[in-house]
Length: 357
Image (cartoon, rainbow, N blue to C red; front, top):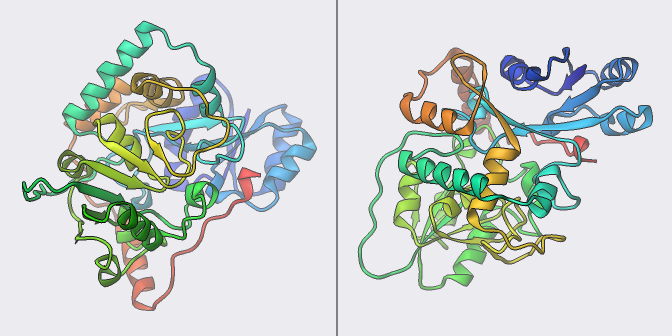
């Protein structure tokens, strides 16, 4: 049995399909004590979405001897934002920790540190990366316009804004104090570059924290870019600066230089310029090995139409062939709610750190 905690109602069906291929019973609840009691009585595990964990869940599970498995989105997720209630077609299950917490080894870190990647696997990973790049597939696959920069020999750098209270930032931010601080640091390292600042889509939609006024951003950036698809931007830049954003991973897949100010899962393996190198990561990986671990071995995938398990290659093809879904009622209501918060000067709700303990 798996007792799932902190899973939003709109994504439960997808999560059940992604976990359910093991033939286990699944129960969903938001009550920490009930979850631990049921899991312990049935010798089951607790699956938790870390940012929505109820208080004391980790402590109660530890006391009862119930295994705690952290559930997160995979790195190729969906057509549309999770914050817009688009269900995931990929998740990761991690028993050791969580991939965005550099404070302790996660299953992904151990996999990348210890796996002997054979030729068949790395060849498959290389083909997968080529297909991702050729089809313009990313984590969320948002639509966007083309973007052109002047051909003047000037180095062009993309700075990826983030959700400032995201657990990856709070756990792996390495002392960087938000998006404006990231921009300042990028400008200090790139005094002559053309800097493009891309706000995070969840922040732009008003769902999450991290907004920077354009006037403030333009003190350090040359342009604030919005409404442009990420692959389009990565095609025209020489390098990206990131804190913990998956944009850095997307840039690596496309052969761009990546300067990392924080400690994301793809840092520390010899592929990025790390300004705050993560602990423990002393192995040098090829890009195909990183891709094999992060995209093939670590996540699990389902076909969004049938709900059946599928390969990452099949999901990439599905995402490339399908248009973005039409707006649905719940996402529209969430955007209206976010707009109302902005008009009242209220900040979006913060995330919890509970389930990372």
